[in-house]
Image (cartoon, rainbow, N blue to C red; front, top):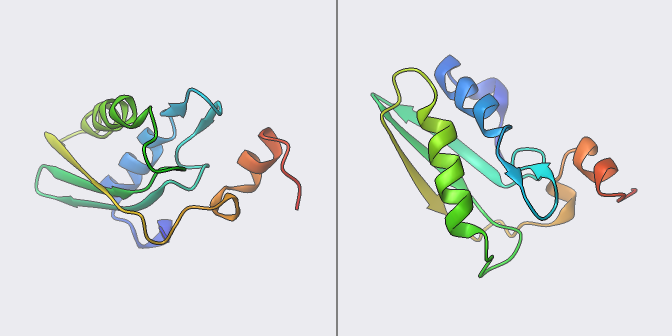
Length: 107
């Protein structure tokens, strides 16, 4: 899983920018949902490794566009590549405490 303390300053900036990408169905940002597995910045390229809550998510194209815009809003990032993975499989335990509380999931 994504370990924030291991990110570079620029990768932390991308991480913060991704908190502005809100899943329109759940009304929670994709970071707190636990969808972001990795962020790597090399030169002016950002690669984001992520998953979706379900395969065939109807919002995947919209999310890709919003994620790309958020990443490219960070200084000196000119391009963003999104690597979609299905392992580890997403589950509600990957959500932050805030996301679980927002969605009314206790435990």
